[in-house]
Length: 248
Image (cartoon, rainbow, N blue to C red; front, side):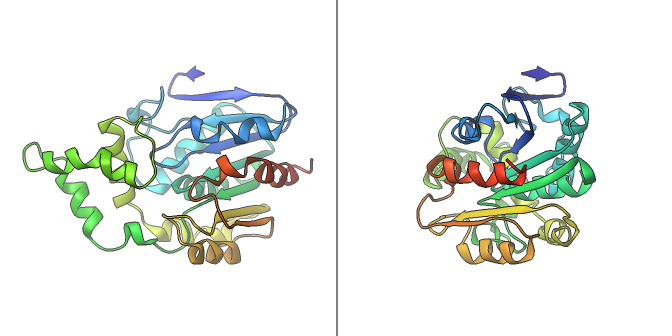
């Protein structure tokens, strides 16, 4: 559904779950989880700026806080209350900060293969920031742009994303300031599900467990297999835990 500045899918009726995808990503990333939650749960799957029908101009900022404000604006525009926010990967940090911004509107939080309070190996060091600067250069940047699709495929992302979306993802990853997320984890006031795959190639389980130790009480689910997409491979288990956040 397109509602002006942002787009989303809206399925089911009842208590509300709003999903926040990572980068690159979109509503499709929760296509297994949404039906597993059941028809008695209303699932709103947001499309983030630059993805699906949500234009980048809606929120061109690349920081976690800027994108969290976009999520908060969407929840407020839809006049949602008693919301469980569920974020995947980078969307975990975005959704978590949005939960702080939204206050009492959010009564539960799900962090699935989420970024943690400290940088994971993919974003450590200055290399990513150099790539972010280089990719915009008209001539010198073309070899970097040429390698982007293959690089994202090797990390396990599907080949459906445009060059513009991949470049925006690089900018968002390079802009990650983990203090924006880590400083707000103690401010969370709602029960929080933390779930991860021990074989996740992007977020080491040590970081996921660190997040689990710092986040508010709630379900903790560790899967031996499932990689970075446990919402695909373990949709039923995650759905039960998320329903529990709503008291279902």
